[in-house]
Amino acid sequence: MTALPGRGPLLTLDTLVRMRRGPDGAQAPEPPRRLTVPDGMTAPLGCDAVSAPARFGPLLMPRLPRVGCVYADGTRWWWLVPSDSDYALEWPAPAHYATGALLPDSVHRPRLVHRPDGTLPYTPPIPLYLALCRLVGTTPTWSRAIIA
Image (cartoon, rainbow, N blue to C red):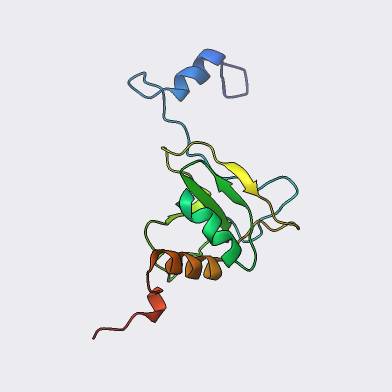
């Protein structure tokens, strides 16, 4: 690596390629993939995502008062929700809550299957939570008896 007078080191293409590799020369892991907000939409509350098995997708859609952006990858459907929609909620299995709308490594890039009118990409999290609980036969966490 050479340096320019009065500036830092000059990065060459070879240097950049080496930086992408780990210390043992192996390819560095790919950064996590994230569900993206479609062009023309804004996410002022940040974005997380909730996924459910694909068989639940068509059953959940009509139960929701508003449906935001929904993505599907063949095995799961993903709903964008505002950040921190997991606060004080235990999302029922087999749902998966993805902070930052980060996708697990095993997931193929989902395609957008529903885009709402307007500029907000969110599905309201409480109706989504209640609909998921109902479909899987789970009592919402705030309704469970408190054991002292």
